[in-house]
Image (cartoon, rainbow, N blue to C red):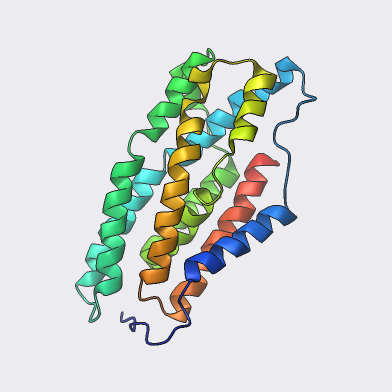
Length: 230
């Protein structure tokens, strides 16, 4: 399997273009997940469900990148132009370290609001979550690991705002300790998003690679909407 090095300027600023497409899709399918008109009982039930659903997605982040990193290594054996795969493997290696333990953070946040660890771990993820995450394994192994960048670009491309966090804190009346993961991601994901945008601009992506990444990003956005709007 051989992928040619980028030889024109068509892929320059691809990260920025993808970011705009995702922003437009979010605007077109916006949904107010939390509302100031919620009763405290409904707000707390919603927040519990939100954290458990988030955990069901985030727990797969590191395993997915480990599979993608391994796939890069396998493909390198037959790759005549290794720059893309070596760059991808390096990115996955770095980002694995950055994301390790974040699923545990969410479990601890749930414990703060009285949800036992066991309840979170034993809830069966929804079919839509399984479709979203499971499709990533398929595309990594039977398409190309570069496609995972679209999934990551969506998940980290829209960090929660401080205004949204304050709204949820207000309507749930939960302590700040229950929002540790959300607060940290509101800060960390801004840098992770920018780092990934830079990577997408710098990688020797062909037009075909760009299509794969874009397709997965938009697919992930659609599935994510379905997760929160069952």
